[in-house]
Amino acid sequence: MMEALPDQLVWEVLNRIKETPDRNTAALLCKRLYQIEKDQRGYLRVGCGLSPAIEALSALCMRFPNLVRVEIVYSGWMSKLGKQLDNEGLRILSQHCPNLTDLTLSFCTFITDGGLGYLGSCTGLKALRLNFTPGITGCGILSVVVGCKKLSTLHLTRCLNVSSVEWLEYLGRLESLEDLAIKNCRAIGEADLAKLGYGWRNLKRLQFEVDANYRYMKVYGRLAVERWHKQWVACEALEDLSLVNCLISPGRGLACVLRKCQALQNLHLDMCVGVRDNDLISLAQQCPKLKTLSLRVPSDFSVPILMSNPLRLTDESLKAIAQNCSELESVSISYSDGDFPSSSSFSLAGIISLIEACPIRVLLLDHVYSFNDSGMEALCAAQFLEILELIQCQEVTDEGLQLVKHFPCLSVMRLCRCLGLTDIGLKPLVGSHKLQKLKVEDCPQISEKGTQGAARVVSYKQDLSWIY
View 1 (cartoon, rainbow, N blue to C red):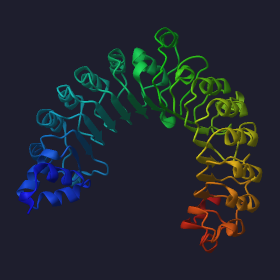
View 2 (cartoon, rainbow, N blue to C red; view 1 turned 90 degrees about the horizontal axis):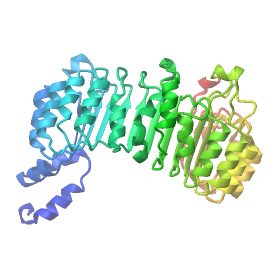
View 3 (cartoon, rainbow, N blue to C red; view 1 turned 45 degrees about the horizontal axis):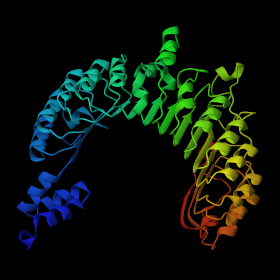
View 4 (cartoon, helix red, strand yellow; view 1 turned 30 degrees about the horizontal axis):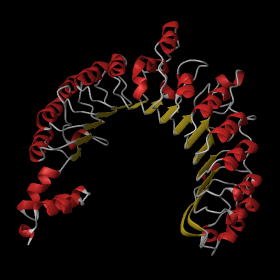
């Protein structure tokens, strides 16, 4: 029966099987499916189960000659699980995978710069992701970017020994980079991003995260400042920007990025010290297409520098966003330390300005003490709101929660660690079929019985250790 089917039909049927175990089972049914699976397989993920590592990888590459994407992940590896792949493994990939375009190395502690050197011959490589590869330095990355001139995606996470950034300058000259992520690489600071130069022109996604516990204390010297001013190119293509634990200096560095990205759609600022109202006001005026805004604001007590030199965002930022970003759909506002909330930051009026002016579908408020029952009343007019998450919003009471039944489009709600809410607040929702999903976590006065029937799908968890 199978032999009578045309090749194109069999190929399409097998192509619809996405799970690797299911594909492996199908390939064992007959020789024809085995051969088609061999030619069709474009993705391979290996790791701790690969033993002996070199021989097994070589056999897999020979079996699947058309691999496009490969992930080598050794999360949870211990010596008793056998030897990890080393540089020889990358040599095998470079020789037997001519179509390789996407490679991920995660927790590969035996791969060094010498191994990355083999990737220079993979001229079609477009994406490289390194996660905790302590044997790799900036020299190894440079060898890759020199050989792989089509590289458009580069992610570095916890690459502790990458200090030199000549590779960043080289990528800047190529102007091919579209997606750059640098997370917790201790020796790479904010000022180093200036070395990307004209590479900013085509960059669409930037994620930059500093390890706050081991900050490499690079300061803005005169040379770094001059690089930002002289080599600056407007990042007109930037659509996604995520900055975590960054220092924002007025008028230079990352502050310039916030003022120049005209195509920005998604913005995430997490514990970024030095962000001012002027930065977000300028951003709002330049970014009418902004769709997602996520702000995690450091409190005065969580960042010692703010004790003597407070730099707070205020309602002026939110009002500017409300006036200029008419496509904003998702808003997340949180504070780093709910026990010591900033005394002068976003007020209820600023949050309401966003609710009234923008078609917000998703709203998350975490440790926002200014949000109360009046805010819940304002949400009754939020015509597009579908998802609401309240985390430690202690000023919201049962009176405000009972208004949820009047929210026009709300279908998903999450309540977490809210002290002022009880079963009484959920009563109007019981049997109303208003919500599709309700998630209640660690709210001491809400019982599991009180949540029953409040939504089609209910999730309940109670752990009060956070109180004590």
